[in-house]
Image (cartoon, rainbow, N blue to C red):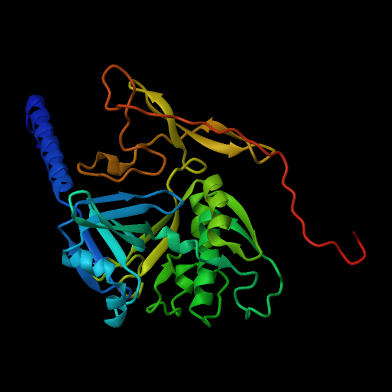
Length: 377
């Protein structure tokens, strides 16, 4: 943090602040000019190649769904040869899957190969196109068992039902499926997602884990409550409406050796995907910036559901304190419910084009059911 000498005159203090601001801007610009670090890993997360001779790299991260990463690369380069040589990878024990990580501006994207395509262009060059899907795609291959603890031939009761704050509920549901996948015999405590009650759970060999969050912590965060009911539903199909209603975002981080532990005491293998569900909007908790002026600043409102639990109403947030980190030079992480920057529409603006969409409520009732009792049509 830049320290300004209060003994200086007001003009000198302003000049020092301006110089410090310009220096931070130059540092951020230099950070953005560093090329992304694109690495390809085999199925066991062993580094195979650093991509440096590509024609292009495109990456798109979608909130609550699978994003797409695409690399176009010369085929006659070792990277292109390795991507195409699936048989060779299997013969060498590198497995069929190809993992990718992209580090840029202190952020990391990661994903898994969907397909690789070889194309000869009009100039006679051979080009490899490798398409990856972000790690959220992995969640689409999990189903929520009616009873995650019992064998597949004993599924009683025939429906899984749980309720709680959305961040805790989604974490619990996915964690139970991962424990089933790893054939874990861990005895569930009263709160399976409480970090203090998971000290005897060994996840050092797991490829995917859920970042623990206690029920009490989720309650203190004020996250919207949800109810989940599943009879072998796909996890993505079950979780998506919960995430949309509560405005919770799934976050998947690829843990690599040398990274700080994702939570205190975490013992994870290199390449583990760490899943968490986070309330980044603040719409139902601390309030979200929904308007304001350049004279009065941002107006934050908190949304609350009305009697039908479909429509919502907004009330003015009473706590309008600006987060402390917003006064720290170089901060690039927006706080929940508060934008880091506001682009205004007008004669002088940084916007070229934009589009806004508002979606209204639809259904007014929800019907559930199953088989009728014997003798009832």
